[in-house]
Length: 256
Image 1 (cartoon, rainbow, N blue to C red):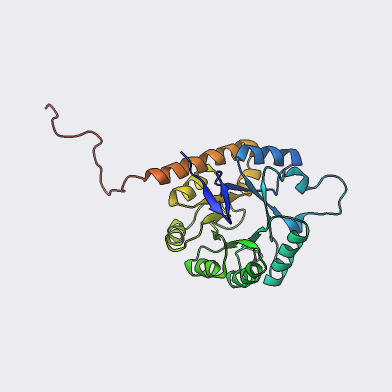
Image 2: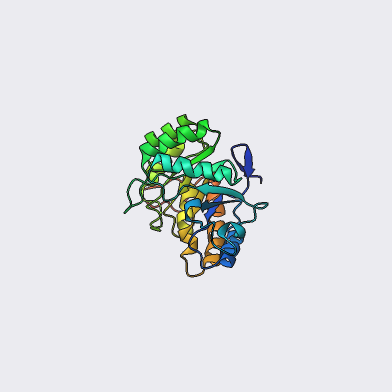
């Protein structure tokens, strides 16, 4: 069965997008990316020291194998995020950008208004924007109207590992926007990834859930399998929920 999805004219088989921060070494980064089965990886440009001697994080990413998704992590204004995206373009990276504009330093919740503002500018400049945002339908609609390729509502605060706190909100967004919905932030373990896919998300983006695991490479493999299982469960269609028991075996023809 061919079950692909499309983003900006590109077709992907994998529905997991993996971050590249917090790993113990570049070798571990490479191994986790490989085990995840990801075809797209994201990297925070503001956290790369381009002046340091020796190999950098970018050297751990095979650009022939992975689509690079530069992100604007640690940006707190629309202007700052726009500047980082322009830097990514100058460095010859893909036109895909993950847009993050943080509104609160303690919770790392996004500034939805500033995100929409930045998205409008970047889309006009030819960027293919994937915005991190709150799990708010109105914000997602505004981002779609601005021309974003997808919307990326949070499951829970960045790095919290709390899983999907508001599945109802995610489902409402999926049902009411016409672009891929990618759950971003808060995925802590494989079951969280499966839930996201069972809701109908196009993909899941994660970093800390893999990198902070006791065995990151093994967790990357588990996440890959969970995303696959959750997607298959969504396509299969779950049984209806019932308030009371319903016997699995038929009652008719039972010999007393």
